[in-house]
Amino acid sequence: NEKIKNAVHETKGRIITWQKKPIMAMYHVCCGGVIPQECVGFNFEKHPYLERKKKCLGCKTYKRYEWEINLSHDIFCHYISQFLNKSIVRVKKILKISHAKSGTVRRLFLEIETLKNKKKSSIIQVSLNNKQLRRILNLQLSAHSAFFKLHFDKNYNVKILGRGNGHHMGLCQIGMNEYIKNGIKIEEILKFYYPKTQISLLEEILSLV
Image (cartoon, rainbow, N blue to C red; front, top):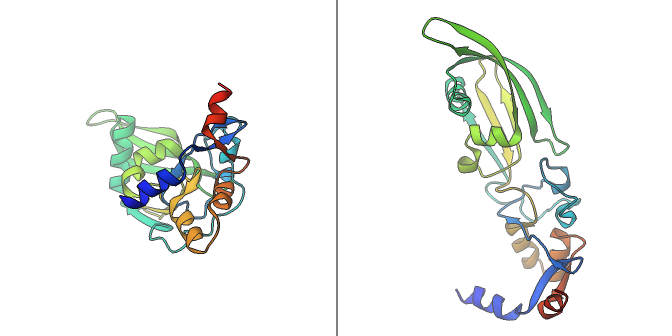
């Protein structure tokens, strides 16, 4: 790809750093307008340059900026059964849904009926965090996003409303592309997606090792 070859040639010897060390340059397809600082389960103390506090406005027109998945109660129970390695009969009650500052589900508390054997069942309570829910609901394959809300109807069919495509950390590829089209300089864009960083010469960084 000639564009990639040219990009590599033009940026040869330059590297993004924080405190004179190479950064963990995470990136994703589309952030969906989610602010990384408000996400859950990430160690910003170790990587403060990923704690972006401003909203990306460049990816609004992307097809997965917002998305929706609908699951029947039976399918939802099937997914939970596989994850917990238990035979789930039904969701008996939604005890609580807690959310992160961003609005994404932090933890889901359920009361479910499980089948001990062919004749006996029992009622148990289950607590599932964001990462576990992503695995259960197969979001990695279906929607590729760490941001989602859950809405249950009276029959416990579930509607999953999400935003973006990826983990929301670091550079938003769709957003960056849009900013470039609008004439914003690459150095400014990188500063936006990786605050507190700078572009350094690789030979200078190697001399410090």
